[in-house]
Image 1: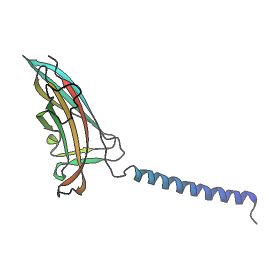
Image 2 (image 1 turned 135 degrees about the vertical axis):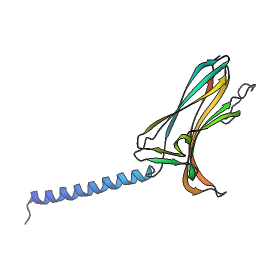
Image 3 (image 1 turned 45 degrees about the horizontal axis):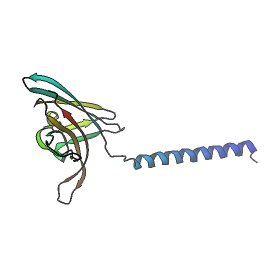
Image 4 (image 1 turned 45 degrees about the vertical axis):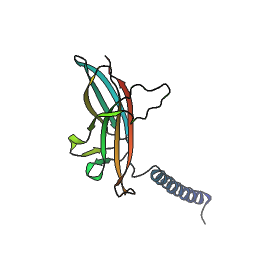
Amino acid sequence: MKTWFERTDLALRVLTFLAVLAGGGWAIYQWKLSGSTDWTSNIALDTKVLPYRDDLRLLVVHVKSKNPRGGKFELDGKLGDSFELRFRRFPDGEKANTVIDEEGGSLIAKADLMQQTGGQYLFLPGAEMDDMRTIVLPAGAVVAISAEMRVHNGTKDEHGKPDVDFITASTIVQVSP
């Protein structure tokens, strides 16, 4: 005959085992729900205008990207991935209350941020990257700057081209006279 203490001990062990199973199951569920194999990146733009010569200025742009997840992800240009920085001249002469899309204005330059890495870019867990590009612009110019990261998600779109997910960051800068 088992004593009250032995029965209580057995019950507590069974409950502990069930709690560990439930906690592990919940953790796996949350991990899958949050996109266990998905990627994400935080992108921020930091700009600075420096004198250059005559009426020209240097616009220095730091594209800061961070992988906040616990898993790595890689950009591979051969799969359709890209990481670009685009400069657009902001449209002049718009009327008051006109909304201008971030892709509005004329494209004046773009930079492939993966070019110097051979078309591949590896983001380790928690890694922070800082890519810098500089462009010479006339004083007084207003430019829209956008950084866009596109990652092939393993499928094809309706046109048979690689389907991609993307994330962007944008800002507008006036090149000081």
